[in-house]
Image: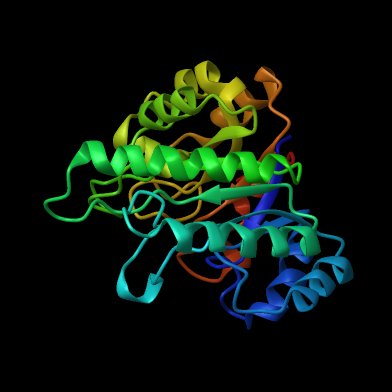
Length: 263
């Protein structure tokens, strides 16, 4: 059975953030992730993990001004100093939380920008970050996010583009963060793609499509996918990153089904 983690940014919103760690542990999750930790002191988060016997699986590098619509700055010329400062801040949190993987959001392509310049900026920033994180024993993930619905203009919107960037950089600690929801929208053929890319994948996230809700609300056959991951020998984390249609606990039938109950 996959090792399931809960994304606390999206799940268990019925309670304040600080209480979501306990909710996740009570529901049977053994790991957690969230978009960004930077609002809270490191010691506060570390204590929540320790109190609930949870592993900090992953979080994102600082994304720029999220509230104003930025979704990463790695591809943006002129923001290199800010990007490197963000990597250092993420390292500080990763040390405190025992987190061994970080995710880099590539960012949105500005209107009228030269694609070649954006790609070169992204490559240089990611290469620098990978080298810096290698010194800390940390894996750097790159996520492909769909540009059709959720993030129009996102520079890395297919697994193929992420793999191309990884190949151009050639760092041993670069991995693909594969999100089943985003790649169902952009590519489909999920099981074959997962099997082909598994050696390059460092982290998996999921939500059903359409709607980005829990498994069983859309078109993706999660039972088959989770079985395929087991058969392929995937040992990494699989994170629930969906928007529950109702109370989070009421939508966890998919986990019970994987554990041997009936959905």
